[in-house]
Image 1: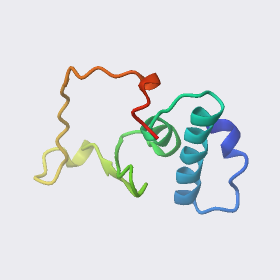
Image 2 (image 1 turned 60 degrees about the horizontal axis):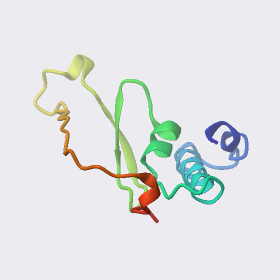
Image 3 (image 1 turned 120 degrees about the vertical axis):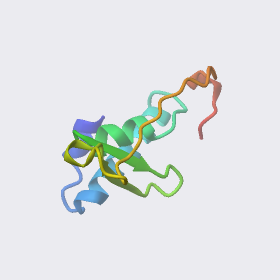
Image 4 (image 1 turned 90 degrees about the vertical axis):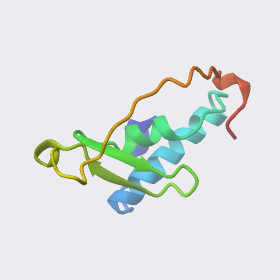
Length: 98
């Protein structure tokens, strides 16, 4: 999906291309595959960048990249990554997503 959509978005700005590509891929999964999924996986595949965190508002699709640290890892404004397991089980077929 992402590769196909990349070929069709030339007139858009770089940020718009990434956003539109993610939206088109989500719609393809929803409509053609019948999977009622959200947009996070497609957005990270379209807009993610090595060495960066992607802060995404799934409602507005506004996003920004944040450095994971590197040379700034010891500064007070370096991001902190917390990984948790909520133990919440879900199935994409349950229809939790529009």
